[in-house]
Image (cartoon, rainbow, N blue to C red; front, side, top):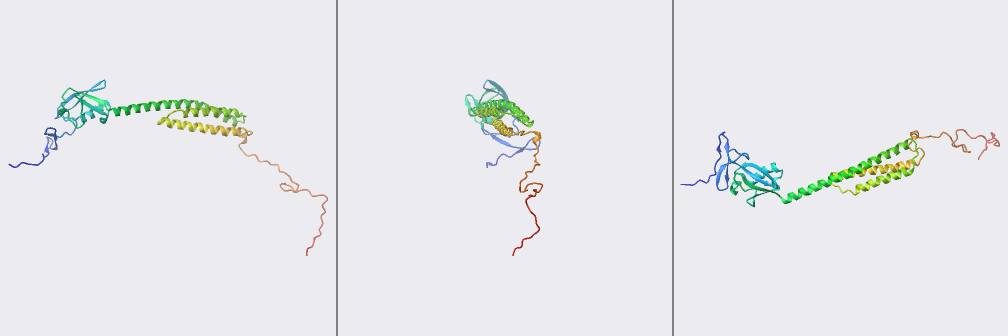
Length: 266
């Protein structure tokens, strides 16, 4: 009798569609499942212990530990690659099957978070806390700068009204703004906090430059007064003896004699 080397062909299911088959460990040929929870496969409940928590999950009895990790990811928030599953004191690989490892209904499985993943999360948490703290420090400086900016605007308004402002006013405000700049420089910031700090530094630098310009303008009479917006043009003309630059010709010299004789040249 000749043996056949042909592979099992797909048969039709109850709906008239072709059904695929897969070879399970141990040589068992079963119909391939189309979804994770095939109603034809018995379900088992597993008690999963994670830190001080206990999770009861239900999965098909012939699932792999990798499939169990995907289910636990929805419950614990841990990605499958961040999980380590231990059964009977031994860590299980993703490709191992639950029923082949001896996992039955109400079996206990221990879930551990991968140490490297936990360390990365702790570092990220500390980083986020540092960013939040730096943002708060920048916000404190921003409030102080807002108060100083109000004083700068008041000085500018005084100059526009023609009020004389002493140089000391500009010097004091400039020094106070520079102190806030030093505070920003002492803040260790990254991420969003660094962006906020850079924006505040530029704002302070802008008003320091404005104070310098106002200080120079304050030394001129009515530097920013509304009455001096236009250019004043004098209508007085200076008269020179030669008559140049004058609107009228110079008066004739009484000692000058005028005659009609013409001198001839050869």
